[in-house]
Length: 86
Image (cartoon, rainbow, N blue to C red; front, side):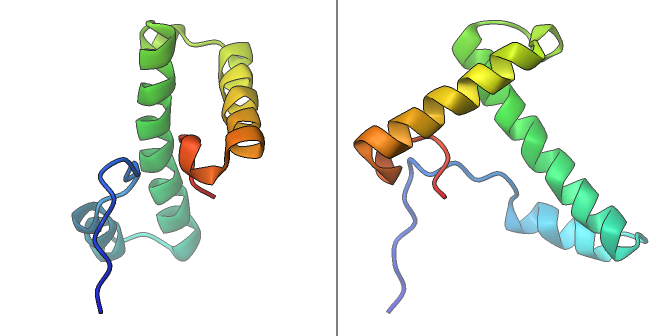
């Protein structure tokens, strides 16, 4: 039985993007870093949107604060209430 995909769960790397990374002429460490970079870009876009700033204007402190806030939500309200589902 196939479970339905949840619309509220962010997708950081699409199947198509993953396939393109797999097909690229890159070493395994380079493929890992490429996937991480694409996923990080998506997450930075979300963080910037919440702070109402451009990605390039985000500070390290804002990123840290965002992760602290999301972690607190996860601990206090459960994983489904947090943005990152891990």
